[in-house]
Amino acid sequence: MAFQISKMMDVGTSNPIVARLGIGLDEAVKMARINDEKKKSINEGCFEIMIALVEGEKAAKPLMDEIRGIISKLATEGVKTQSGGRVIETPGITNLENARVFLKFSKQALQKLASVMGTIMDKTYTGPHFDKVRDDAQVFFGKDHVVSKLLAEDHGWLKHINDLRNEDEHPKTGKPFTKPFDITQRPDGKFLITPPTFFDGTQILSALEVFSHNLLTLSEEIVGNSLAHFFPEMVALYDIPEEQRDRSNPVRYRLGLKSEIK
Image (cartoon, rainbow, N blue to C red):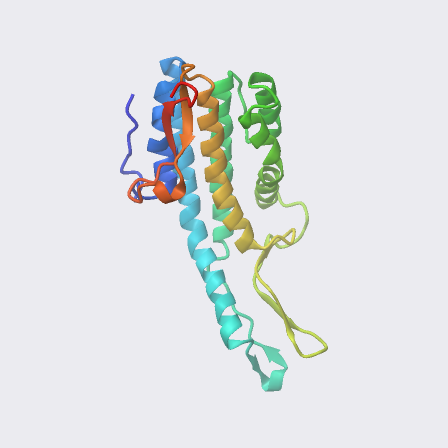
């Protein structure tokens, strides 16, 4: 069962998302002792996760670059004022709405990731309910299994993404969903600069940086390690050190014999 890359995307295998969720998991799917229908469903699910994360990355990058650029400019040039200091020139953000787009695709990726885990564990999940996925994984794999531990450790930021997206879809707080840069002058004359934030006070730049990394890493880790549960006894999943990965196809995992067999 070969993994196929469609022209639906304008990025190739040099993109870590494509390499790691596509080709990087294909060998693990092939090696797992599960039926062909499940293998097909998992491959299709990983492809959909990959598409969602690529689209999320496209939305996040220009916004993150814009925020970083403004922070850098403020650091080097300082805050500018007009009318003898009575008016503060606060930088505007043109890509702020991209935060909503990123969260939309993030939730899509998590919905499909939950579905893939359901396929692996013979469960059905109707949404990104990772508290249920975590609880089922503890029963299916055991509480000490790496998948169970990852889902328990990552519960906080998974819930945070869903909370942000839910507020965007169904506003309840009455607060603006996002806020641009805010600059105020303190009594001592110094300026207090607050970067763009979500409604709950979370800084958008740091959130997008963390979420982008975590979504790819968790998706890859829990699917890969779940599939390893079904490998032949002598086969193991190994992590390729980042400095040893091929830049044209930076897959993270490889299969090999267990160390005791070597």
